[in-house]
Length: 306
Image (cartoon, rainbow, N blue to C red):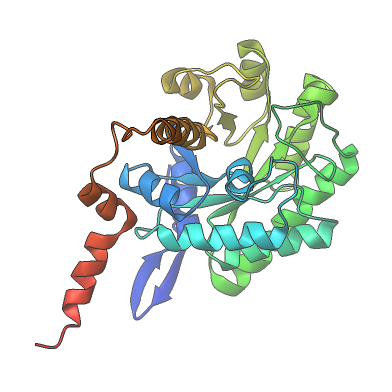
């Protein structure tokens, strides 16, 4: 399949935008693995590990600010985190931002999409939960009525198209529904199909509870689809090859880095509390490289007076 890459002209050269890179991935028949990040360091680690795409986890951003994922973090705080994350992705790895419910009505949704696109996010996810939203794998949630849910996604797609006309960059709209948990599979599938009809680039049916539900979703809804591989969550964790065979396009790992880091930091604190030096620490030179010192020194040397 031929893919038209959206490009921005910069200094006489053609520079492929992050959203164009993401659209190329979505057009591929191969599944893209998408570890989720929540700050500049985790974004750098994902990119350095050679993944082709990442996702700014709302759960992770909330946790890094000391809150659970129940929309206690504001749009401004989320946008600030997105700006930090995109700036840390030095090689242009596409990042999809968690836009939650859009933070209000349709006009708020448009502002959310536009704001994330302006700081360089390759895509934005908008969902149909009531506000304040909560993590899709925790307690029972609520979703807005069908028409309001579809209107949110239509507004997001309008914002995408308007941004493209002005900038030449076309952010990807990921449309999420949590209806499966509260209204059943049929309603969730109905919403995903409607989201596609109004222009969503990717659909995301959150929290299918069985492999059969996952298969039915993939067989019923057209276009790129996102699987959420949350360890310990409601959805079965499947190997990438099986997800790809089903028809998924993206496999998000939303809490893998956060869970690993919390476990490691808690163990290190326990060792310190016991008067011991924690084992398995990253050697200091490797830590400096991970946070960007080596790159900084190379740049610094270019501007030294000879």
